[in-house]
Length: 43
Image (cartoon, rainbow, N blue to C red; front, side, top):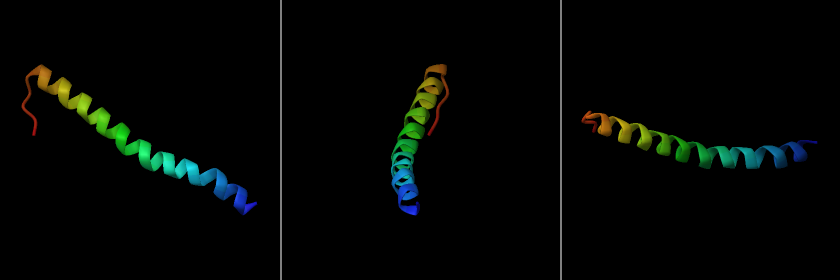
C-alpha cells in the first residue's frame, strides 16, 4: 500500500515543485508589467 501511495504522491510533488515557481514567476512578471504600465518604478 505504501508503494501505491509513493507512486501517487511522487509525481504530485514533482509537478508542484516545478509548476509553482514558474506560476509565481509568471504572476510576478504580470504584476510588475502592470505596475510599470501604471507608471510605478519598481526594482
